[in-house]
Length: 265
Image (cartoon, rainbow, N blue to C red; front, top):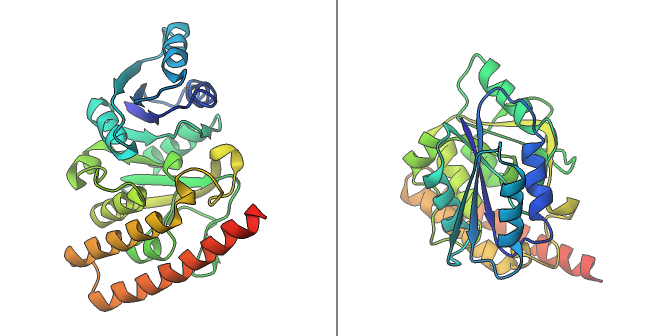
């Protein structure tokens, strides 16, 4: 079984389109369940989800409401309530293309090598690492993830037992929490990326716009620095290497600040 974990917060404008993109996946070869965690929404999200559940009696949907506690806690609760061997993450303002799950699961089940995690491209973006475009299935390394964190959350499928092994999301982190988890998964499992663009995120908007968590660039930068420090503590990287990566991320931070201001004009 594969469990689709969807955290929602005040998502009345996007949640139905998001859920429709899951039920429209068709036959993917294994059972599916949808696990929705409502993180204290105050808009019409709750009634929309309940109406959707009533209209889809043939779809296995687990729905849990909780007090607002942040996306990491919501995702962890979703993982806890999931029954699947595999977990697929999906944010409530993103949508999957109809062949998303089939394409990724086909690679997982047909490959001669082990895959614990697989992500993909989104919004027709092309991933480049060290100036080289990724045009085929690629096994990522810690260094590659530190240089350019990928993939985006809604593209990811990961083994549930590996998530449990690494401790799931760090609930004390409110920014850069995906990167922190991805690095721990890469440390402990086989982490793959496929270049097919199978997800539309944020209605195709830029990664760093004037709204949402991505606008809080200072907090994101601090979260990334904390992630690097955690790698030093676990002895995955040396202190000298950590200093180099911190310098790199400072330059990225400056570039992102400039980008946001340019787009705001």
